[in-house]
Length: 228
Image (cartoon, rainbow, N blue to C red; front, side, top):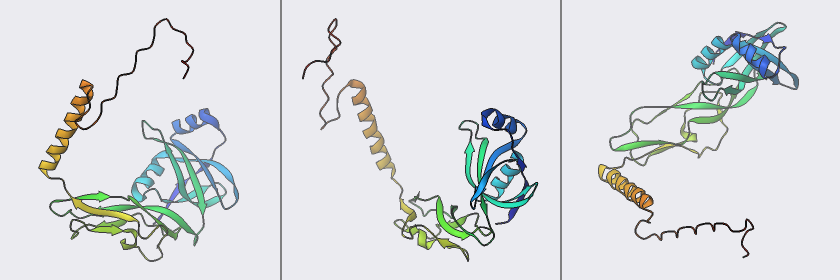
């Protein structure tokens, strides 16, 4: 993965007000830490960081250009506004060349599912160990040629040189299952309709006991709970 050079400035305003002013200026508040150093409060340009994230993914390697020199860092945590999706804060962790990191790398499924089959994907990322300056942007897993009932486990994902699996090698990544037939879908839909009608009518589906209605609260009685 290439290094992305990005400017970084020290941040002197803290709290919600300071963070809002930083974001209004087109920058993202961030904290840089790691290797036993004191945390450094900085900001990075929003547009440049968003572009790097879209291009190289969540494990983008940043070459931060600071006033007192440059530092390599990886995003550790990205906090977004739950409604707008805009990045509100970053936690960046310092890394060194040659240092190995445990990271989650996205899995990209390619190919077409066999006729009559349906893809069931259990993992969207794979836990691996890689050198900080050689973290893959993603792994491709092809489903071409897989039949119904076939599966792919973590140990079967092709990894580039220098990248090692750090999770369970037997963990299921994906498998191909039989797609439901029209008759099965119709039967399932009919069953859900019957349950819905029974719930609206206050009756239980056949074979299930209906719950007795709760006794109405006594009017004008004491607020004290009844003795058991």
